[in-house]
Amino acid sequence: QVQVVESGGGLVQAGGSLRLSCAASGRIFSIRARGWFRQAPGKEREFVAAMTRSGGSTYYADSVKGRFTMSGDSAENMVYLQMNSLKPEDTAVYYCAAARPDYGLEHSSSYMFWGQGTQVTVSS
Image 1: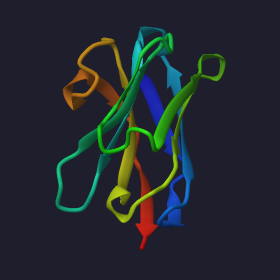
Image 2 (image 1 turned 30 degrees about the vertical axis):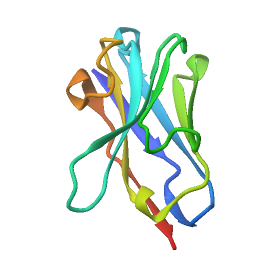
Image 3 (image 1 turned 45 degrees about the vertical axis):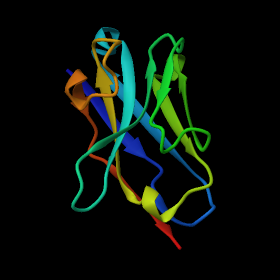
Image 4 (image 1 turned 60 degrees about the vertical axis):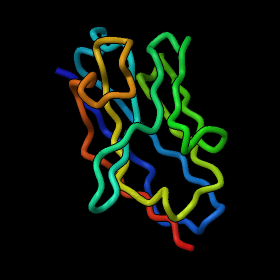
């Protein structure tokens, strides 16, 4: 099993920044990619960003390109989501997830292990 824990959410004004962190532990040798998803009230969970374990490939949803950056520290089994120029529509619960395949990373079905989520609220 793999355990995934997010942190770093909070309340920020529009135009501000937040950095989310995601720690993974357990049988992490089986994990080949990590991703971030978010879910706003009344909406379906949506893809935000993903990164292969090697760091060779990073993917972003169109809605966050140029504003969000995903990075990783393989030595510490951590990944981060730096969120800049935040907008009220970025308000959601953000989830970190771990996947065994390194393809289809924009689909939640590719991920086997999920964190509990961290709330991000952007005020206008």
